[in-house]
Length: 106
Image (cartoon, rainbow, N blue to C red):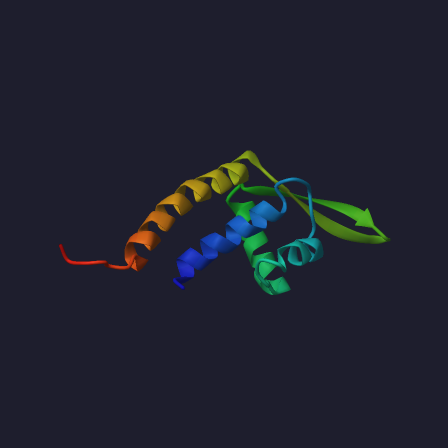
């Protein structure tokens, strides 16, 4: 798979994992596991990229005596998910064209 396409898919997966509630690294990895496996290093690279792009915000809170970073999706992140849905419709149309069986050359 093209690296740019894969990067975009991973970004949207992470955004979708936090779209309904704030979350933290380990939980995001756990929530994504049925869809895709991510290493911690890959996830944190994605989270930093999304934060820099304004698609999520970060806050630190104490949990069990330790500091934990919680991530929250922004309006820009929600728009990215919606843009992805629009893009995916186009990708599916292209996929169907590329993979359609040719019945005849009429």
